[in-house]
Image (tube, rainbow, N blue to C red; front, side, top):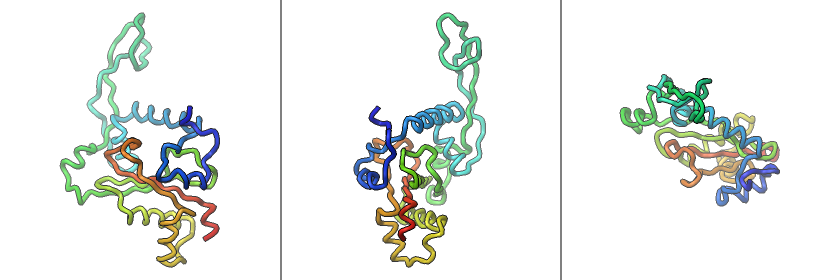
Amino acid sequence: DRRLRRQPITWDEARTLIPGNLSGLARSREQEAAYREGRARIKDEWESIYDYLLVTKFGFDWTWGEGAPVVVDTDGRGGTAAAETTETTRLVRRKRSRPTHREYFDNLQFDDRTQLRFCPNDFPYYFESGIEHHVLWKLGGDVTDEEVASAKAELLDLNSVGRELSAERLEQISNGTDVFLSWINPPSLKSLPGIDHVHILLHKPGLSRL
């Protein structure tokens, strides 16, 4: 599979891929298996990926959905039963956020409900050791350049770097490629077009040269 990586992506290679050749980013076979298993688990437990994100990333409450009928076999396993088995249906209820993504924007003031969350990527690409893959999520608008810069500054602080640096030097680090790379997926690669998010890579070996 050309979308699987046998060797990790180095920082130098990442600089050639981001942002103009994102299709070259990929996971290892083990990472891809974990990604697919994780997505399947989310699909089984939540009504949508949006419900999962609103609860786990943005701290929304959750409740049980109304449920949907699912065909099961006599052993109670989900899915379409084989022809020789006795089919039945049961109501499967999955978790949903409260409010839902649509209710959030339909019933509340858009400008007052902007929220940002910055956290490690649950399913990172296959990067070499020393490269951290983070995601800046935004609910209620597009991520701005200033918000990306603030997220990078946060990472510097977490690594005990940055407080002694001038604002000019911090801007150089943020805009350069020795320590950080960042990108927004194009529409063709966006798995969650309803919630804006920016990928940010931290090259920890680059911190030692600051």
